[in-house]
Image 1 (cartoon, rainbow, N blue to C red):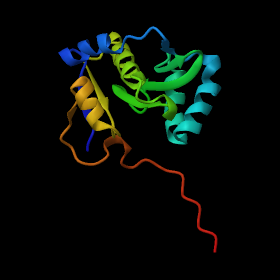
Image 2 (tube, rainbow, N blue to C red):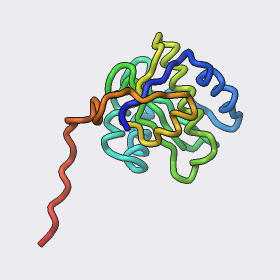
Image 3 (tube, rainbow, N blue to C red):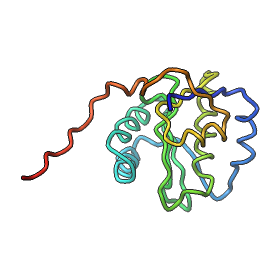
Length: 163
């Protein structure tokens, strides 16, 4: 599936706030002195590529990387304006914490931050769980084939097999 587009003024987006309110979780921007902790966590749970994108987001003023904390423990993150302006992602929730609405809450708070910055739409590039975004915020596919901005991205070569 190609990139997705989300209207930050659609009724589905507004309804998401009520469905994701939780008092046992804190979602907030990453503080500069937490950068190394958050990037290490992202690299450990997800990938170096995502940690690289999050580093860009954390370095923005204000930080465009939000984290979810449950009982003081980092359980998820979501970024915007990392790969390009107007893009949501990367985002992820620790495997042990999935299925609890943390991803939806991060999605809502991050998209709300984008709306507060003046965006009317958000692009979700190369979405993994496309169905989640379609059902949760009414995202629609942008009718362009391929991986969009990620098409020609440099990647770490895989190690050669030992002979």
